[in-house]
Image (cartoon, rainbow, N blue to C red; front, side):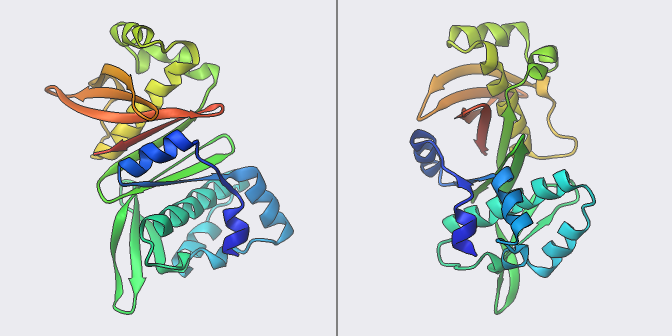
Amino acid sequence: MTTRFTDLAAPLPPELAAAVRELGATLALVRLPPLAEQLEKGDLEPAGWLTGPEMARLAGYRYPKRRLEWLGGRLAAKLALLALETTTASPLHWRIDSAGDGRPLSFLLDQDGERPGPEISISHSHGLAAALVARRPCGLDLQKTTGAVGRVRERFCTPDEAEALAAAGLTGDDLTLLWAAKEALRKGLGGTPLTGFLAMTLTGAEGAGGRQLTLAVGKGKEYKVLTGWLQEHAIAISII
């Protein structure tokens, strides 16, 4: 079962994989169309990956698209947890729940019951699901490049930020990287409500095993966000 599912995992570009490792995190990607095919054929049984409470949550989704996205994200999270916590051998050693604000939480199940596990962030977009696991608060975002981002640019990108992107050689579709970076950072920072897009300001862009954007929040507090491309998807990773 594990081997079959691992075959569905999308490979990471080497430079992105190396950058994630340097952050002390693990990242897993799952392609949703092949996952749907295996489920349809009966080649993959979710019960081999999900605990009882997780199976009950899966059964509660009425719409096939949302059900598949949720499952793909949870399976990606199990793979990322197994990669970070190499002493655990089974995805059933982990239970993933949700906090009151919707943020995913991991719990390690052992002979003594269960205890909180590493931090998790999950994202999905147009046929791809991903999960980031780290020992510090983290945020992950996937965004497929579409014209929609450009149409709402004023909601997340100021004229000064647009100039900064252009100065760094980022134009056109690269605008999606900024959207993803801000979404990943606000997930990592947490809180209710989440930090607004225009409350985060782009202050720098440089290469670091992938494009690294620097965002300032509040009174000059700056955070590095790793961004890159997975074909037509922008990906952004924030470790707080």
